[in-house]
Each structure stands twice: as C-alpha cells, then as structure tokens.
Length: 613
Ligand SMILES: NC(=O)c1ccc[n+]([C@@H]2O[C@H](COP(=O)([O-])OP(=O)(O)OC[C@H]3O[C@@H](n4cnc5c(N)ncnc54)[C@H](OP(=O)(O)O)[C@@H]3O)[C@@H](O)[C@H]2O)c1
Image (cartoon, rainbow, N blue to C red):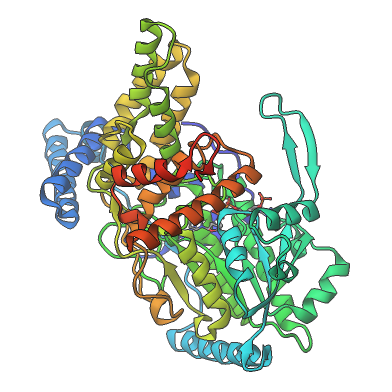
C-alpha cells in the first residue's frame, strides 16, 4: 500500500473525528489518517470478503431487502470468527484473528470512529437557534422595501454549475436586489501542449457569464457585480477597497464554491472545501459583527452525501453522525468536515447560518440544460454516448471489429441493479437557495435538497440504452473492481489503448461507490416544511431522461466545449422543449425515446443546431 505523506496537524482529521475504543467507549489518543476514513480502506483485501459482497448483492436483488442482507452478512462474519476460534484451538494458535484474517479476510475492529461532540446541551442549542432565527427575521424585515425583502448577496462559486443556475433564477426574482459574485482569474491553456494562451480577468469572466446566461442587455444585468477573489485566501481574497462597501450593504453570503472532484487527494480537497468554508464563515462573521450591519445570514452549500455510506438508518437532516460504512472519497469527507465547521461557527460564535445539502445534482428538470457541465453523472453518460458513436467506424473489417470490441468494453457499468441513487435537478437546488435567503426560519437548520424518488442502476441502464442507443451492461461492482477491471485495463494497456483503460478505471473506481447495494437514504421534508418548496419534487426518471437527451444533442457528449456555443444551443433547446410541453400537455421527460426523436428531427436541424423553418 502507498504510504501517505505526513498530514499537517491543522488539516488532520483529528480536528473532527475521534477513534473510540469499543471496549470502554473512550477516545483513543491516536493519529487518524484520512485514508482510514474511506470505504476502500476497509475492504477488497481478501477474496472471501469480495465474494461475500458479491453474494449479498445477489441476495438484495432476489429479496429486495437490504436490511435482511446486512443482517445475514453480520451473521456470516460472526460465524467466520467462531470458526477461526475453533480452528485456532485445534491447531494451538494463540491468536484466532491470524486465522480469521488469512482464511476469511475478517479483521476484528476494536474501535469505531465518531465525530467529536460539541460542548452544548440540546436545550442550549435549541435556545440559541431560536434567538438566531428571531435575529434573522428582524434583520430581514429591516432590509425590506415596501414590505418585500430586498436582499444583497455575495456568492462564491458563481461560475460553476449550481452557481450559474442561481444567478439565472436570481435575475428573475424581485426580492434579490444585488448579487456580488467572487471570481478568480482563469488560465486558458492549449488542450494538447498545456501552453498558457490567455488569463481571463474576473471582470471578463463576469461579462462572459452574463452573456451566456442570456442576461446581457436586460434590466436584470444591473443586479450583478463581479469582484476578484479566491476562497482559499483570507477575506476570500477580496481587496480592502471592496471590503468596506460590502460590510455596509450585504445581507447574505452564499458559499457555493468547492472542488467537486471525487479523486482529489485529501489535502487538495481539504484546502478547497474546508479552508474555503472557514474563510467564508470568518468573512460572514465579520459582516455580522460590524456596527450597524444589515447582515441576515450565511448560506452554506453542502451535500447530502456528508452522511457517507450507511445502510440501515436514514441520513437525518438534524444531525451528522460518522457513517458506519465510511466515506466514498475525500470530497464527501471534507464536505462533512466543512459542515461541522459551519455548525461550530453557529454554536460557538452565534453566526446565523443555513446549511443546504443537495443530493447528486443533474441538469435542469424540464430540458436538462446544464451550461456545459460534464461532471459527476454526465461523465459516464458522455463516455457511453461516445463509445456508441464509435461503433461501426474503421476503414477495414479488422479496425471495425477492434473498435466495436473497445466500445463494448467502455459500456460496462459497474453497478448493482438494485442500487438507488439520489438525483436532484439543479433548478430545484437554486430554488432552495433563493428560499433560504428570504425565510429566516431556515436559520440554524440543515436541509436536504434531495428526492424521495430514487432511481435504480437498472432504470439508469435502461434509459441510457433507449436514449443514447448504447448497449450498456451492468457488471457486479465488487467483482468488477477487484478482478475484471485490473485484468481488462492491463490487457488494454498492452494493446496500446491507454485512454480506454483510463476511462474504465475512472468509471470503475469513482462511481462504483455510488452504484453498489446499500446506498444511503437521505431524509427529506424540510425543503417543503421550512423552505416552502413544492411538495412535488422533480421526477428523477424524467429528469435523467432529459439529461441523456441534452448531453446527446446539445453537447454531443461533451464534444461541444465552447461555452458560447453551448449557451446558443441551450436557448434553442429550452424554447423547443417548452413548445413540445405546450403541444403535448405533459412533461417532455415523459415522452418515449422514439416519440421524442421523431419530434426533434421534425423541428431541429441537428447539424447546424438551428430550428427548421
Ligand atoms: N454537482 C453536484 O452534483 C453537487 C452535489 C451536491 C452538492 N454540490 C455542492 O454544490 C456546490 C457547487 O457545485 P458545482 O457542481 O456547481 O461545482 P462546479 O461546477 O465545479 O463549480 C465550482 C465553483 O467553485 C469555484 N471555486 C472553486 N475553488 C475556488 C476558489 N479557490 N476560489 C474561488 N472560486 C472557487 C469555481 O470557480 P472556477 O470557475 O474559477 O473554477 C466554480 O465557480 C459545491 O459546494 C458542491 O459541493 C454539488
């Protein structure tokens, strides 16, 4: 196993997590290494353990009962330990764990992890949150004009997927008087040579953003202002000249910037997600404390996956508990740490905060528009789409059969058919952000922006095959990760196909964690009760269908990269989807793949991406 570089104490997990003895429930004075908190560290080290996971996947498929499978697994483990004890006695081995490890891959853990508790009692917490809500209501009333809130927001992450949707919705909401967006400069490099071609200033990025959001030249354009900054710097890297003006005008800060990369190393994720959050919290605290400040609240964008992997108990909105089944990656872990920092600022310093936790965010619910995002769920869909496009290409029979074989390999999706993932369209997330600005009752609350209708890997496969035309097959994730993937990628590399091998590895290692049986269930309810959002949460199946259609036709599976071209296409696409909705009287996501394709070909010149006259 690779040795982990020394973790500096200021970013050590020990700030948040403690290792506790199972024997006496006391915290152990030991350094906790980040990798010990990941799912991967605790499995795949023994063939029997891998096989047991595989078998449980089959049991869940047959019975549909994850709890039963989990109990069965626990019983099998106990049996393994007992058998090892008997064998140890029989052969005179003093340490039965040596046998259980060698034969069954079973390690007895004498400890567990938990988050460090804050020192406040339940009553103290409730009382102080009550005060914070009242203060927020008074501040919001003071910031209102003609009985209507007039909020002035500072937003981080405005150039990102979620941030852009917020800007679009904010442009159309009267309650939002001003949005100041913190933007860092952007280096443009040649994709092949990495040569630096240009550095875009925050002002340039801001005006590009407004043009691409179709806001250039509109009245709403005046609401937006762009300031240079970097969330990894103190004061968010904002210049002193700007700071004084902001302190006397801002009513809210929305901290939305983060690094949403599932394969970043711990220190990189920590800097972007925890250090960034701490800087934003300190910034908001200074605003709140300033004399005569109009500040109402700080809104922190987190993720419902801060609850990590848990099987038996739903992930609750009102608490964060260290997951019994650990975290899938450092993104989830550092977002959980950021949530704890946010809670500490609220409880220790009295900062008025709202924590919003979206599930896996996908394109807009009606049309699938995503403003060029290619992350998370988009990545495998684009891979399947491109593999499908490649099929049948090649100048001779040998070439064609080679390409076809590679395309088939690229369409192996390591997922348990019963695994359910929680998808939430980006428009619902932005609606939640806007509601949090104008609902002081949200202060002190952690709110999941998730769906109660989760979608299974089987449904995902079927929709992809219908909409993309691919032939995706599901592979059992444990066997795929431990046996098939290393074999296949080894062969692919020997055949000089490093790109396909890399794509398969990424798909296998990054997404397998989200497509195994035993995915967490995220409790929902506060989105409706507290934020006042519609009870009809978006239909995940329809939204996922629209994601596939959008990625296919608008983005050509990620090959259309120019943001201006994407913006042009998305406008045409949006108008076309609304027209179809009006004509059919139902959501376009409810149309079958064949009906949608026929309607599209009738109305759109797909080559030029122009409406047919
Ligand atoms: N996408 C999802 O599925 C998902 C799910 C749940 C929660 N969330 C949360 O939602 C939020 C937004 O996610 P997203 O999908 O919109 O991410 P995204 O598209 O990757 O955008 C990230 C944004 O953060 C900005 N940023 C990152 N580091 C920065 C820094 N040091 N200084 C200034 N800005 C910085 C980026 O700016 P540049 O343009 O300069 O890079 C960009 O605007 C995150 O907090 C994320 O954890 C996302």
